[in-house]
Image 1 (cartoon, rainbow, N blue to C red):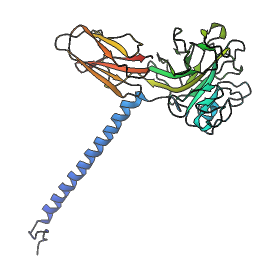
Image 2: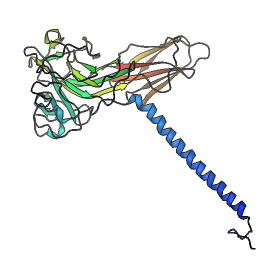
Image 3: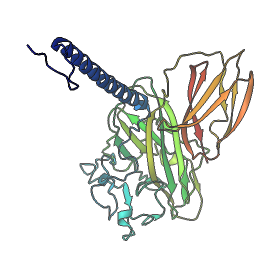
Length: 361
């Protein structure tokens, strides 16, 4: 019986040929599986690494709209944002909070940059919102509320921020702008009255008067969640009589603020898992600052320290290496925009600290 021939005509054993082909197929499949596993591992690593840096605010710049806001009181055109008032039975009929978009540029009422309340470009993108957080005679106060993309986790630290700009025809600037996080909505049946029965977790410092009509001003802070919070409400949580105000330009006796770029992130975890050590006394000061600050630290022997600074999305901004002992180093990061940043400290490849860096300009 003749044996089967390979391509070169050399006689081969059928059993050995089958074994050789099976071995080749096995290694081909093995290599494919290795590549697939590496890919899946990368995807998993990416998801785990970014889960804490996700912005939990949907439609944070008010740019996704159902229709162009050609008239006032249409914040619900930017879902899922709404005004938490049900005086007329629902948040649509009761709405007085505003939405502005470049689609209405030819209509001065709700356009960008020119609109019924003044002149301002969006901080980013093509849209922003607007509310009255203070009126000294009518107690007519407006809010913005939004359901978050996920519930907040018990004992996690969250960093929240948004930007405001005082509309230029309005003469009253205030400092009492904040944000309240709740398990359920703050829906209220009292028309436009102050929601002063809650304490906002985030509140602008009284000394930081929000009086700029040209630039966007940062309102920011961090807090530890009780757990289960699902809604964020933005506005002034004080009665007019207890609101800190200053009369600035001879305008209307009330405040009107444009609002843009709202962000809430879990800022308790960036980079590798944290291991607690407390004997290195790493400090950043001053904080908040204008982009110029210093790190004070103490290292022993051959200790090596790495300080990494991240933006609010988790992107690495700067990495600093130190190996001196018992000293401080000045940092010039004046090129960074105002906002909340995060930094972590690694000593001998062990994370000893994670905290926030706040830049105000």
